[in-house]
Image (cartoon, rainbow, N blue to C red; front, side, top):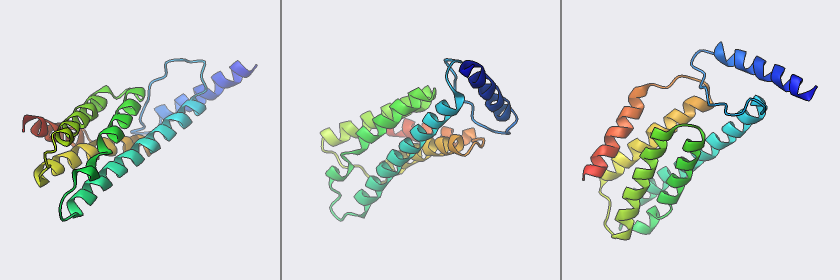
Amino acid sequence: MLLALMAAENAAISIAKMHTPGAGHLPLNNKKISLHQLDTAYDALIQESRLNIVKAEQAVVNYLAEDNNQLATLAEIPELIRQVAGSLRFLALPSLANMFIQLASFIQKHLLAERALDEQMLSHIADVLMSVDYRLEGFEHNRPVNKRSLDVGQHSLSLLLAA
């Protein structure tokens, strides 16, 4: 009886999503899972990921605001980005996860080598962070996302990695 009710609820949710213009469709790997519970888990994951991105952005802002630009201010960014990358993999967004893994490695190398990041590099880092955040915001609010924002993030990452 419960499986039949869950199947009916899943069907209703699926139909509602199909008729919502621009609604993000996340993968369903097990049809015996409640879509409501899965959507709730996805929502929580997206909110936590966006919170980590905000923390990373704030670290960049704090770094820029400092007179002596202490690299320690940026120390938490690679781990925050890696956590978001894991979330992106769970959300079936592997290209965004790869972007974040590459960004985390780039920042980690600079921190380990104790090389300062100039404003241009920080601008590119912000572009990558914002492009992923924009994509997650689209999922959070069920609205379509312009692919151009992702292209900007990928281009900025390419410029960072080429430097």
